[in-house]
Image (cartoon, rainbow, N blue to C red; front, top):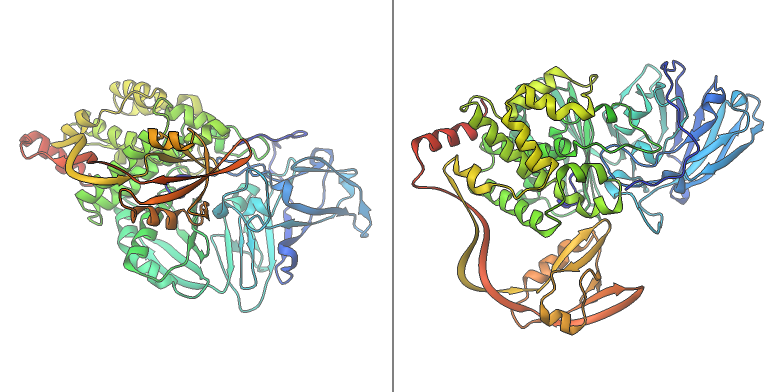
Length: 598
């Protein structure tokens, strides 16, 4: 998931059982979207054959690819069960996300209403909006874990879904329909993996490397159309096909939601979904959408085709973190840029700029926090404070791994080639063993790669940019004076979990009354949020040395407003990558290999 270039799990549960045999009787859901009152989904589940093994109805505590607490049970507003004659069967809420049937064998119908996540106030652990649900007059967004649950023991049961909605609406989803016109999913995991956007949408379709690509778009003021997005995306999709040799899916769906919020995207196996603030359609907007889509689209490889046994069947009660988050998100972010560079969509200076931005982000968080530790703590508040770095340090390490593989293979095999080999070895229906993956990767490549993993993934040694990029005839300079004076806030805002905090405060700000790790809540009277951080950043860039501004922070439950003045500093260009004019022929040759698909 790539959100804002930044992007938790504690749940009280009764029990959870996996069935050894796949249930054959489908769970048939019906959602009445003609009734959109109260911002609630009205859901009916038709079911039969429940036993004591299925006595608890489970709502999701989180979902794959979010790495955050959701506790969807908090949004349930009513929950009832009925027998075949319509008589109510007693139910009891036994934990945040679980309702127990008193006599499960009698249950034939379950009816509940569940509030949308977007407009429902929650004190903590609010789901990211691109992972949530929304009901409006002219459209609806469904992410499966936000609407549906399942009886314990029936996570692998087939699902049929009937949606009742206005006749003039369009439906966008990767799900297929059966002969009854119901959407179908092979399991609960698949319905969660398949978001649904419906309403007043535009649609565009193309074919890339034998795969059908569909784009569905909701634009609040009709400023952005699907064909505009798809036209701009064509070269990226072609580059992706070349990078992967062939697309591992027959159909892929992009779902775009343009309204008042700017959150980012959420990847899925056969689709991706985007929640972006609506603006006039420009080349800049289109290019930004394509850049984000490049990341999400590559997830058709990781984790769809390369994934650990831990996420083969996701535990929606108490998910188990995977140490290989670096593979799912870090390698994906690296690939999204590499395939654009090699497809000649992104030039080398732009690619260098991407590297510089990622290093800057890595330096802004705890540089002693390893990628392995980040993966294993991603569901905790501690891990969430570091989570955004999986897209920065994770991608940087993947880039270094690519260079090391090319060096060891004498330019015949890089990370792209190894990833494609792993995808062929495993695939959607075969997981790799969680604890053995580093050894598997090393055995498939070179003994020296074990040392690389130990130093830069399992541990957090300083990343060797000068040494590795020097092999390509590219120089790396950590800091380069520009000779200019620039304005500075005198502090480093950071995004931790769902809050903005102030770090690295200069002495004048400390003397003015600010403290390290104050929660930043407003700038010049504007409340700070994910929705308006872009505007505030733009306002900050306009300030010059000496210009005053007000910062409001929250400390120990009290709001404190402090007036500050922009400071002045020597202009320094940081984390600079440049071609070395003195590169040797061997370095130039390896660089040329590095810049193309082998």
